[in-house]
Length: 326
Length: 302
Image 1 (cartoon, each protein chain N blue to C red):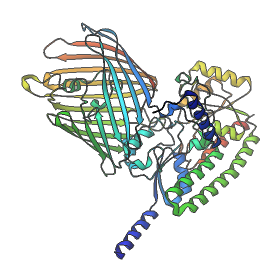
Image 2 (image 1 turned 180 degrees about the horizontal axis):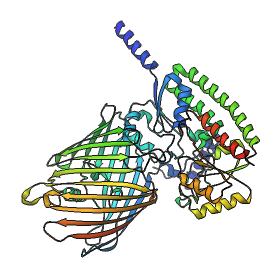
Image 3 (image 1 turned 60 degrees about the horizontal axis):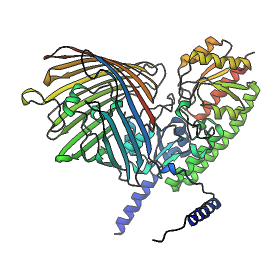
Image 4 (image 1 turned 60 degrees about the vertical axis):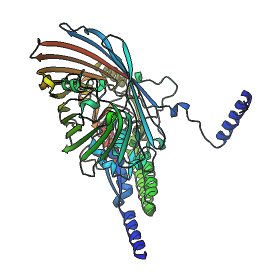
C-alpha cells in the first residue's frame, strides 16, 4: 500500500473534524472505549509464635480490566501478582473470561474463572470474609479452584431466585451448582446452595443476611456456613489421612455494630485432619475503597501445639471497583 | 391456514395489551412510571424510599424481576453504579441492558449540574459524580420533564398507547408546574433565604425554590462529618444567620441531634427525600409539600 504523507493525514483529520462539527457532533474521548481498569493491593502484618512468614508483607496486588467486547460478549480479566513462599512474586491470570450478553435467559462463560462451587471459592482474596480462607477451602482447593472451561448458567423460571450452573472444564471434569435465595420479609434473606464436581467434591452452603433498609431497625448481620468434602486431583493440598477424602466445614457471623465498623467470629473444622480454629476479626471501612481489618485466631490440631496468630490487613482499591456479589 | 393467522393475530394483540413490566431503580421513578403508565404498566422499585440510593444491596431476588422486565428505568449519572449493573447482568435479559431499547437513564437527559471541571478530579474529593449531581429528580421542574422522558420510552415499547402515556405525562407536568409556583410563593413568604443539608441531595430543589445552599454537613461526599467539622459549619451558619438544617432521613440522625446540641437555635428538620421515604409519602408531591412545610415552620419562628 502506498504510504500517505503525514500532512495529508493531518488535513484529512481537520476535514473530518470540520465535517463533524458542522453536524454538531462531539468527539468522545478516546478513553471512552478503554476497559474499566481497577487495581487493588493488600498490606499485611502478621505475628505468630514461630511462623517464618511473620512481619510485614504485600501478599498480593491485583489488576482488573472489564469491558464489553462487542454486541455479543463482555469480558473480564483479573491478574494477580502474589507473593510466593520464597518471597518472590508471580503473576497469574486469576480469572480471564468472556460472558455472552445477547442470549436471553442463559449466560455462557468462556475462559478461566473461579468455579461456582459454594460461596468462598468464588471470592477474590480482598473480598474474603476473613483475611485468610477457611481451613477446608485451602485444604480442598489450594489457592482456589479456577480451571479453564465453559460455563452455562440460567435463572430457573420460579418466583424466587434460583440459579442453575453447569461447567465443563479442563480434564473433562464437570460441575453442577444450584443457588437459591429466599426473601424472609423486607430485610432478611436466606441463601442455600449445593455444588458437586466430578473427580470429585461436593458441598452445601447456607447464608442468612439481615439488611435493615430503615434507620432504627438495627444493624446488618450475616450468618454463614459451608460444608464440603472431596479429593480433587491437582487442587487438593491436604488430603485426608489414609487416602480418605478431605472433609470439613466453616461457620461465621458478622455484626455491624457501628457505622462502617464490624465484628466477626469464625469457627473452622477440618474434620478429616482433626484441625480446628477459632478466629475473631474487627473491621473498619472508611470508604468502599479502603478497609482495615484486624484478625486474631487460635488453631488446634491433635498432632501439634496450639497456634496463636494475629494479622492486620489494609486493603486499597483504585480505579474501577465492580459491586461484590450479594 | 386462515385459522392459524387469526389465532396468531389474537395472540399478538393480547400480547400488545399486556401491561409493560417495569423495574425502577428508586421509588421516585417507580411513582413516575405509575403516574404515566397507569394501568398499562406493572412497576416495582429495587430501592426503598428509606434507603440511601448510593448504597443498595444487589439482592439476587431483584434479578428474577429484571429477568421478566420489559423496561428498567434509572437515574444514571453514576448514582446506581454500585448495584444496578450487577442486578441487570444477573437477570440475563438482553432487552434491558444498558443502552438497549428497554433501558432508560433519565439523569443525563435532564441537564445535570455540578459536573466537575478540569482534570483534577480524584477520589480524594470523596464520592464525587463525574457526570454531575444525580439528585435531580428533587427539582419539581425536572421531575415533570422526567415524566415526558418516561412517556417517550413507554410509547416506544407500546406504541398503541403512546397518546395515553403522553397525555398522562403532560397532565402531570402541568399540575406539578402549578404546584411548584405555589410552593415557591410559600417559601418566599417564609422568609427563609439559606439552608444547610447533610449531603448534596437537595441542591436542585433549593435552587428551584430560590433558597441558597450555604454548605453541607458532610465534609466531602460520602464522608461522615466529625464534631469539629460540624462546629466549622455552625460558625459559618451563625456568621450570616442561617438556621435551617435539612437532614435527609436516610443519614445518621445522630448528626442532626449533634447539630441541635451545638447550635440550639438551629431549626433542624429530618426530612424524607424520596417517595415512600416515610409512610405518608406515596408520591413526589407529598415529598415536595413536606419539604416546603419544613421550610415554612423554620421561617415562622421569630
